[in-house]
Image 1 (cartoon, rainbow, N blue to C red):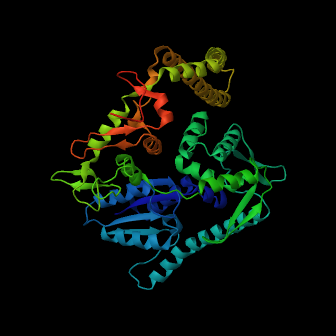
Image 2: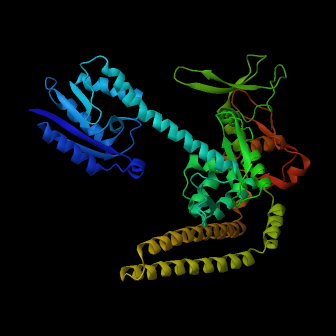
Image 3: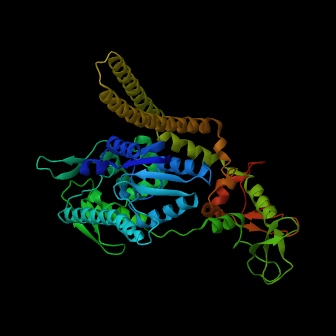
Length: 496
């Protein structure tokens, strides 16, 4: 008695177009096996495309065949060859793999006798026709989409901020969808300000409720559909822009401004910045032998590299960069603001009216906290209505999602106000304790540009290239602002 595995496949569009169904195919295959006295070893049914063999049930069937004895002849039955595959290349590859495991694939409505050499011609026809149908269908769909775009319509899936709608006459359009549309507008306006990094804007938008991955976000800000345009692509190089019939979310001028910002060429300066940060005294050091400015580079040791300031002309002048940097920083941190400057800063802080700002921020925080409680109350009431089945599941989920977005926005506003209040508290402590007089304590955290500017104002002098000992020089103006931490005396033009 012969045996066989039954394979039943259908895709959703085929089921609608041709009336195929899984039960119908299975019933016909079972009747065929009963009539021909074939034992059914297993039935594998799936709703999946046949463009390749990356299908869940087919993988299970193929694994079953591989695990069976290689001596035993095995068969796979299906209705037609288009159930097996709609791609000639993958079909022949799979047939070859099945033969390795002594397995024969056969369509009961399109039988082929593989013992006859000429039968391979019919197999080629049976496999080619489904692929040709797919290619023709794909081409017709592409032509239809292109014609719709030429008329200014957007027939694809609506991008974030829009929703697909069908008019009474059957035409499909896209329309703005809130709150996503408002968030998309906010994104473009924030980028146009050019004050934040794109990644920071994306994270804030996500916190506001925009569900968008990083790659999708960068496609979003380059999509001209938001300024009312539709792109028609003819090939990889040729494309055309058409004025769309849908409602734009932003102005065309704003879109082009954003494109200029995000397409500005950015240099990769990570390694260069790291070297500049390490050799921040470069350009301010002079060789005592030849008078040239010192350069900076690494010297390879037994286990690692060591940074040095050195003269390219005179090989004798060299000093460890970390040692000299530390000596300069230590000297700099011995300086504090004079008492008169501290008094001036106190007047400046008083002019800012910190108490008034604090009162305003506290009022805003109280208002936001009240709104947060209201959102929690709304969600609690909605949950009770859902439990007693007054609220439907879809309505409850919609309200819950909207509540989540509003709560995130309010929490972000609350966080910003708390930050402002902490800054005011910090200013008050600084004014009371006068700890802001040590203005160079955070020198190591300064930006490289700030360090360079500071060194220009306070350059190193009289450097001992053996010990790293040095002195600092101040101009007449700075000598009135800075004093030594130890004795609080006004610093002279050249000191220690």
